[in-house]
Length: 107
Image 1 (cartoon, rainbow, N blue to C red):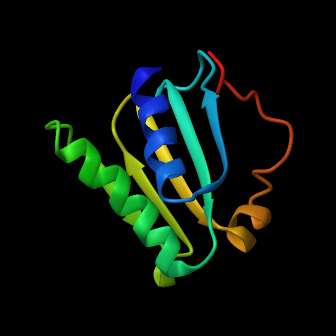
Image 2: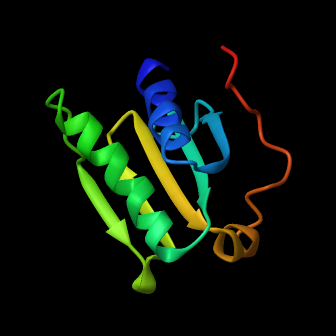
């Protein structure tokens, strides 16, 4: 959970919007936590993802994988136990990632 909370802090520092931390259920073998945030432009989406990557790199935590959609409408950073998704608003809306999710921000 600590790494997920750090991601949230990094994203908040770069003015990420509607940041959610979701605890994956036991059937999910990909990650323990998923962090979702929204950027206001493709440049902002890229800056948010870069902030997470740079801040973790400062403490020798490197992503296992980074995936970007064309035009930076969505970027995924996979840190093993935490996966970070940064979306443009319209991309996040398309995948309906605003609905009812268990938000663990206060744990």
